[in-house]
Amino acid sequence: MGHRIVSVDRGSAAAKGGILPGDELIAVNGEVVIDFLDFQALTAEKRVALTIKRNGEKQIVTLRKDEYAPTGLNFETPMMSGMRMCCNHCLFCFVDQLPASARPTMRVKDDDWRMSLMMGNYVTFTNVSDRELDRIIKRHASPLYISVHCTDPELRTRLLQTPRAAKIMDQLKKLSDGGIEFHCQAVLCPGLNDGEVLERSIRELAELPGALSFALVPVGLTNHRDGLCDLRKYTAEEAKEVIRIADRWREKLLIEKGTRFVFPSDEFYLQADVPLPDDLSYEGYEQIDDGVGLLRLLETEFADSYDFAEPGVTGKQGTQRLAIGCGLSAAPFLTDLMARYPLADLTVHGIENRFFGPNVTVSGLITGRDLTDYMKDVPCDKVLITECMLRSEGDRFLDDMTLEEATQRLGRPIIPVGRRGEDLFNTIIDNR
Image 1 (tube, helix red, strand yellow):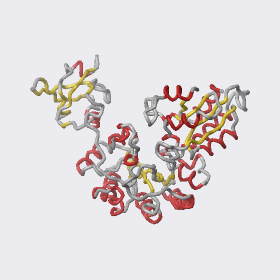
Image 2 (cartoon, helix red, strand yellow):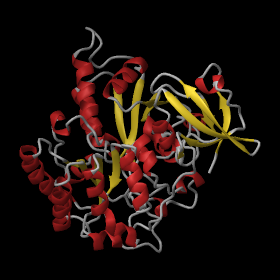
Image 3 (cartoon, rainbow, N blue to C red):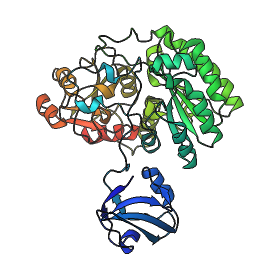
Image 4 (cartoon, rainbow, N blue to C red):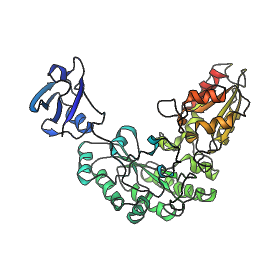
């Protein structure tokens, strides 16, 4: 299996070695290269022997460079291989619940542990063979982010709809024994993997030295579930019970392991109408990309920015009427925050999600049409939104409406705001 070289950096070790675009990389130091992980690990040394194929003939090129310095080779894809796709049929899969009008890129079901290493994506490990597990350990690919959901093998098989799901604890134990660390996640479904099942999952995961944390996230349900299994969202009392279970274990494990280990997402606290834990309770916010501690960190950073602002900056002032458009779940929190730290003539507006359905209440899944349909009747000069509503390029909502189109449709500026508290503080100051 060869990897076609598309370009060679000028002045690099590879260029000095005479490697050319169009050559194929076959092996490094005699080892076959599967992907970028192998390539990076094998080319970290000062002296590297590359097996190259040119015009059908193999040759060995020896490169000399500084340790860990790049070789200067560039390949057709950054990963040097295709994306590994999901082989599950999870009962709670969000992709299966997308409306027909969702753009095709949203329907891609990737489940690639290499993206877990690179980007912090959660993966299930159902498509990881024993041989691949050995390679993860050999390459010291750590930390990883793993969707466990539950440790009961029969129930996990039912949840993920594949017999491969039953192997998770054997896989995690092997990773842990091999020195690999990992963060865990459970998408909790009422009556399925909470209660006693959750207690077992916490207990068994906490016993693994490699397990760093365990995030608890409530199942996300849209209005587009025709033909899918019967699931429902958590009631306030059920959400409180999840938090009670987590709190018992957090207290116990803080004493025994030096970490609270179990971290319910913000959605559970909002659903239960229970105050968020304090800043220190999140222990560095390792699971923030899973919605764990987003609001607490936002408040902490916003309050710090307010308290340490230059004289004359704080207090309600300015000529512009500002409005924040957000999901229904975050609206009460942001309304309270803006009231306690006044900066401008500003109102907060929770927007019902008509694209996915009213059960979806997070800000990041608000579409351009839902935003503009709601905000067109709000008296304001500028609208602030979280940048999470836009794809990573920062220019398009989930319904494919561009930021420019939404701005034109609304007739007022729409200003994306970063996720940090100081981002929100500074954006309000700059636009009031």
